[in-house]
Image (cartoon, rainbow over all chains, first blue to last red; front, top):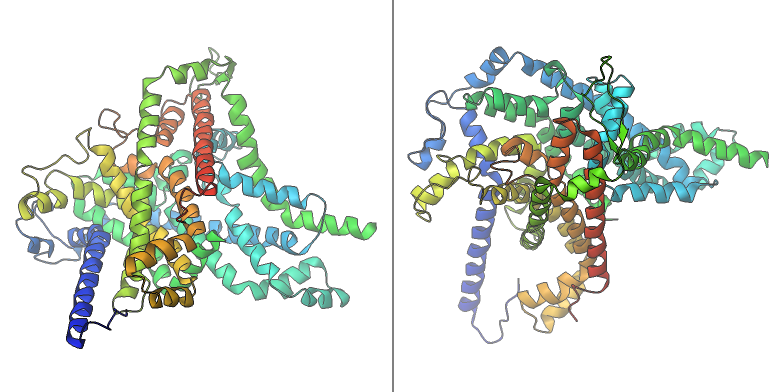
Length: 288
Length: 301
């Protein structure tokens, strides 16, 4: 930050710079409070032991007195389904991520490195589907799932979300930048297309695969509307649906629900904190 | 010839899983959704024999119904009102991105803090905000007891004049970080020479922001505006978790109404028709966006 220093003397400049700095950090503080308050409230509530969690006399009431971890233990006892919700979320995430990455990597390859009739049509169609709202497809997909006898199964939750056009284009992009000589050399050695994809190209697509894996994980972990529609039994609910169900059922015990919310955030937050670079790359990829 | 055939076969084998799923769960529903919208089809209705009642062709009756349905107009109005968050969220995200586009202590932490809401499930977001919004909750405590800005507690989610705006605040809160990251990457692509040249010419911070940064990141702005318009029209989770469309349908939005008609009332034909109308409205909004940006609605010189 360089102020016009020709006319003013040094102390003046220093004062202005200081004022800007204070203003800057004041702005950051306001934004930071706005961004974090709901999380602070959840954390504070989840660590409280008794009494009205809402009624605040002063701000220090946000600090739990006495501070207790019992809600984090109680939740598993009082809501036995909690373990199931976690398990369901992990199952949905595991298969969802695996197949979404696999399907994207498979489809991205011919779209990047092969010429064949219909290629252009396929790519245009894929981009066009991005403009149409998934929400308009809910009804028919629900009927399809019922007709396939998949209602109330993990497969019902997974199937419509397995293809990600974003993922396909992300993988295509990473195949595009690999030099063509590599697969030509392998082809001369008699390698099949499958072997080239599997053993020559995929090992070079690590970063894109990582970006897609992370995005896909967050998406499947947080998916809510579709499982809400195609799942009937509580025992099938992932955490999102389970928590919203709990918040209605156990609305009196905010402390347990708050603890549940924070527990449900842990996997995604850990993933995020250790892979921020990939998150930024992934979002930037959307802009391309 | 044989080689071309082999090559094509290989290409389609690689594409097969993606194409099958895309056809079954994206392309087919588009077409079937349109045809189904001409039928009366209640999934839980049964015939005398106890079998599910088959769809009955009723022509344009669903559409006639929609255009005489006060709830549809309520949902449409609320969804269009929801678009008000787009300028707020974009200006907010851009300003925050400019603030955080520097190397200073605390900046890295702030970027992380801003992104935390984005990766948090809307269910958790909704639950937390619902509690902040209750009449003796933290928000009223701040505004009434601490800052004395209000004389009495506000029913953020229970007053039908305010509820929609409260839910909009939550969507705004969750989205800021996402657009901030997009703007940050746009800003980081601006070459420092541009900015230095402007400073040498005596431009102040405000001029640099409006005359150099904004025109240079126009493509990013367009992308963000389009994404956030679509996002605003598609809200569902916030509504489901916090208000259920109430009070008195004051937070009923398009997607929530489709959900209610399709999966509470099981009126699949009517819900399909709503879906078609909804897709149409999204198309119009996107078209207006493209038109606006192409004709230089944001051009500064």
